[in-house]
Image (cartoon, rainbow, N blue to C red; front, side, top):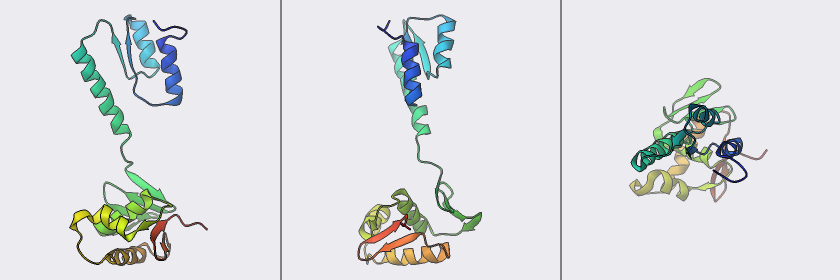
Length: 170
C-alpha cells in the first residue's frame, strides 16, 4: 500500500512517459484488480504470496521480451536510399543495387554515424578489425565503387585529408 498514490496510478504515470517493463507485485489478488493492472499495460501482475524462483524467471522473461523491441531496426533510410540490414540489400526508388558485403558495411557504418566524419582508420578498425594488413587507401577504392553503384545521387561527402561523411549540409 503506497502513500499518496496507488500502484495503478504509478503504472499510468510511467506508461505516459516510458515503455520500460513493469511488473506489478501486489497483495490485491482479485480478478478485477489484475485486469485493471494489465489494462494499464503492466507487463505482468504477480500477487502475494509469490515464489522467488518464479518471480526471477518472470523478470527474466519480461526483460527478454523488452530487449527484443529495442533491437537494431531492420532497415535504415536516408533520402531515397534504403538499406535492408538483414538481407544486405540496398534500394533507391524501388530499384535494387548490388553491393559487395564490404561496400554494404561501409554504407551502413556511414549511415549509423550520419553527420559524423569517419576516417579511413575508423572504417578499417570497425569493419576489417584484425583482418587487415595493407594500405589504408583500400577504403578509397571501396568508396569509389560505392559511389559508382549508387549512381548520380552523391550521398557520400569526402572531407579532404580527414575522411568521409553522409548527411551533407546543403
